[in-house]
Image (cartoon, rainbow, N blue to C red; front, side, top):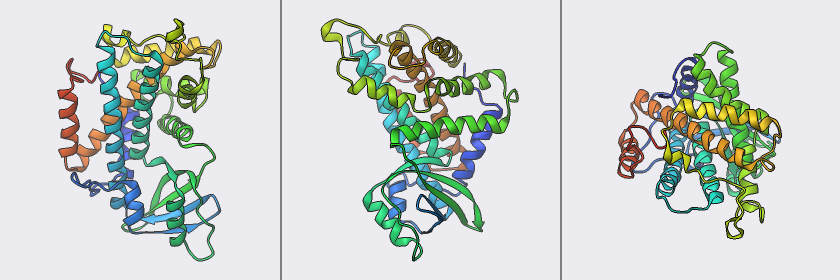
Length: 338
């Protein structure tokens, strides 16, 4: 089953094309990242409060930075995906706990790329960046302080100028990223309306959204933290205890988008009986794996379509595809594991 691309996909694509308009440029040899745009780009900043700042930018300059960042994050994700494939198809033992952590980072970088593409993204402002932003603000404005922010594309201010909102958040970057991603998908579903999209597409979105409704909107990060950092919770193989199962089923049977959605729905139902990643880690791990693959397919497909529709230099995209092919990710005609 291919990725459903009906009413919800069209709304998502529309939002991405607004955030990254035609004329946005990505230099294959020297792409301008969001951080580089911040340091070198042309924009003005004013404050409305101590936690929200308004920035006026050139849409194509900012759009190019968003697209460059998304492409870099998808490079990160692709290496994690490749590493997992090679591990799970090797037939050799591998730490289930580390597999969970690798799935998490694969999903994290795909989520970050998706948020960049949709024009509502998470950004950690360092002390240096905060000082640079403050120096550009109007005299007497509130100071930009370090911390986690959401950067949100707004409407046009004039010809060739758009508004951005830089909004301070209290959560850490990883927690806020998942809050932002789940809220983006929820808002897309609400904008389209229940029952408007084809059943397969709506099920895909609702399976992802419902995982957050059950476990909280930062559950992937919370689960990663418990698995990786709590002594004695997940790295238990040397004591011959198994709190987590290996993901060998992903290499032993054919996967499909429909199968992943079915499984995520079923595991969400099972998780409702005791909605806790701590007390039901086996179910949480399977939910994370399926969430990861679904977010990955959505992020890569949206990135590829923006490249095609905006006529952006295809060399970076071609390089990604060549790497995936050389590593065997597409050996079955679709990206592993589906």
